[in-house]
Image 1 (cartoon, rainbow, N blue to C red):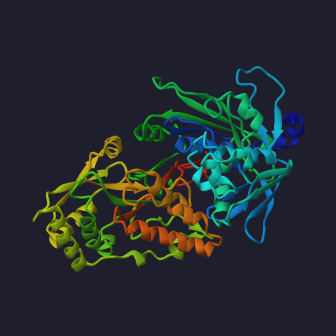
Image 2 (image 1 turned 90 degrees about the horizontal axis):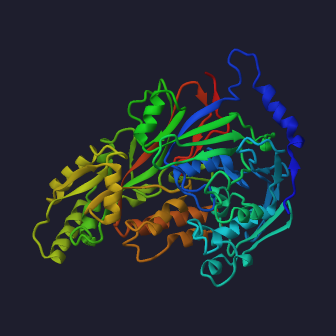
Length: 547
């Protein structure tokens, strides 16, 4: 049975929040505000072990918390873990949990007043969550990344039951995790939303609805979901959250009292709501029209834009032709033509990926991937023509998602290929919807494709090449993520990332062009709203409003 603690135990914390918001200073402390916000699309699910869309990531970020967390510099810190130890061989992780982290389930959704009850988060909640990820019946998109847990690979293959995983809870506040092999990437995985806890008794009580509606989810983080209403044919779609006073303590500094999300169908609607001051902030790939002197604009260089080739296009899937195009790109010349939104890219992993508190690109110079050589490019072009049995190549166009990037700099590439190789490749701007439809249907020859990991790790970026059909056609089934997970030290992890980049680039199925920023636009009088440029999650836990 779940141990219960009544709300009266937490009365002191609740009162502290109330009195703090009654300050009589000119500016106040910015707390106690009700934020009106927006989501781009309805969350598909609020199940942390399964969810991956940006709307869900934002709600989950504010609703749950895990053993570890990552700060703005990429450092791993304890969160619900009070402390942890790693054995000398790197295989045994022992966590001591905080005793002041609680589950809260809102029993008063119909405004029927009942005594509120809080449930301690225990080590078994983490054991159950991690077993769920490894259970092949669940088909978690994060399963491969957690296969480093002992017996994880065999469980995913259906050879062993999830109960055989190297996971145990000697007592309510001690968690032991045994790995199959040492993995320097493992703490990063435990800091991700996929490793947030899940209470087994509550999970089964939802009878297959866990995370799908406001009756089937509970919170152990800063806020809980009070109401979630979505009608795909209606317009008054909302998701309403309240501060979770159960977790208001010296570890959680929850500033807002309420978060009220409107669910919009597209970014145009979100921008209009922002213009009308109906929302405090929004994320975007395109910050044009927003003066940084008037708005607070944060960014992260989290996307790598690269050329991909349709494997069914006989001409432009030719390896020697892809080599010719790649070797003839002068990125130094391209860099001078790029706006501040873009940075010339030689590698795959973007600068926003942190490792050891530093940008990975500082630890591994991408200049090692500079292959610019016009003479060799011409040689590969001639080989391609011989293979294709032609003396000239038909012109094609690079498909570009206009919602992601301004295609103007690509015209420099087009001009360069025409001058150096005698090939004309034009540019075709399309809408976001058309871009995605044509990628899925294979209706393109060349496309400028945005690669973005789902978390701030090199593993997440590299995994996109293994899990995305239009990216993995030339990899021959090889999984670089396996090598990455088996790295026992950070230094070896850096080398594994570099090796994975070199291996993927050597296939010439993805030719990096530029790193692209993602943005958070915040209205005046709001402070300490942060975002993850990879997952798209916006964090409102510390948000303050001084209007």
